[in-house]
Picture 1: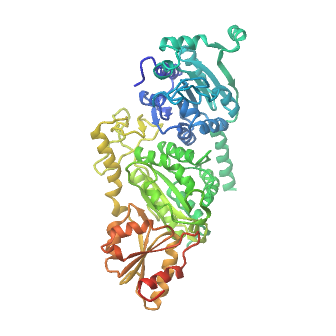
Picture 2 (picture 1 turned 135 degrees about the vertical axis):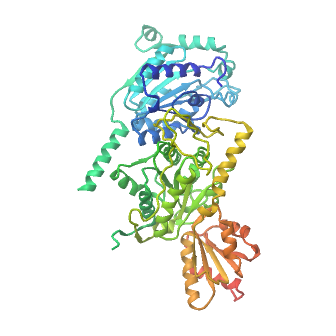
Picture 3 (picture 1 turned 90 degrees about the horizontal axis):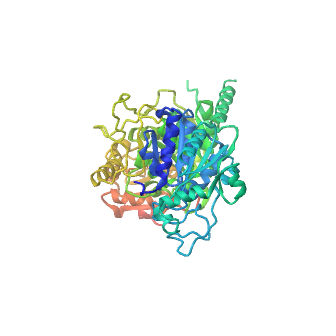
Length: 255
Length: 382
């Protein structure tokens, strides 16, 4: 049900390849999504899939993960799910470092409702609710995730399909809260209004406006959006820490 | 030979009932006057290998228990007025996706922040219609700790039986009051466990195809059957659909599975009701004052009785009509502006003989408050 040229299908492709290459058992994967274009992704996969309400996917996912920690929990979210209505759950899931993989499909627009600006649009953007251009600053997903305590943070784009797959594989294997921001294109609502052209034009921009961390291109053009792994560290994981609480509580009950 | 006697708060009686019923997972957020439920469960659940999580807000707590329920756990959250408002969207999701869960609402004065440390029964209608759209709901209540325990067990049993959220509408007085609770022995009360599908691995499982009896066997997330769960109208596989036939069928199923079982769900108690000329209909802590008054006046020969409601939704229309049929007048005793009064008036044959004895100032309604009104109705002066 995605529009022609939408980047979300490409991101789903990267994700499916990541799951396949990791040879994960489909019975042990739960995909939890919210509401919006991005959220429909859970209806297209052969996992346990939970299509929830707007912004709360991570809260539902926390319940799934804490009750069955052996499950792999994947949470693809759009701009609104992740950082507008769902912003609070995003930072708290990161703070807890619960072992969930959050995928932020950032297309800088609310597509399903017809092209309103999002907290990832940034200033100077035209949208149906910003006919005179936006004055709102945008969140930097990577910086926010880092500050909130996510123990794995990465960024790629829908153009960089194989790179996305590799980053998603690392994120899924990582023990703790992992965030992968993938820049996506919405030619229907963002591209047309903001003169970024069609899907091909927008993908070209994903290529030309970004550069790999540590690359010469980034060094020479610090204004480019960096791609790659920004954080990869070990930090106590929430479900494992809770298991210690259970062990302690059971011991104290017996003694 | 009763070993298990406690002298505890109503909120703690609710905790004991939940653990007896098999609670595995609790998510919550602190709010007066329900916080003791979360506090006690943070201690007791891990002792039993269960999970407790304090979420970042009320909404997240409701969402987390729905997620946990789908993995096969018995789940609960607890809250009060403002938190109950916040949870409503997710409660609607649990109605639509048919997720068993229990929501305890220890009522305080509202609207808004209202009267956090004082009693009210103002959330009766919110329990029924707080979330948007047509649906049906089960809400239980209790006036004493033994019944708080019992109704909590019943709430978990009904959540599993009907695959639905069940509300426990307690109030601040019952929640914070201390009195005796005798915890039943294991096996003394019936416990309904999750009905799981018998469909074998690799055989087509239809998560949303009701059996002949209307029940839908579940399969745990993480198990052999992978399926979709959504808050959209959905077909028997759980996939979104706006086919008018499917939308119509699902909505009717969601309402009928509860409304058609009103007799099985109905819970009530009679106090001095036989031959009563004046009937006090009440529930929760206000029922304690009504019962006190009725017993007191019975001793003096007055024919006053109490019909104590323990299930509010679905409203037991027929039962209330039958019990009130012979009464000269019915007095609904509650601490709101007449939320159950409207239901009783709609249920009985003579609605003009139904009156309200209420108190809405944060104080528990007293037997003398009720008596004053009763005297007016009886034509015995002001």
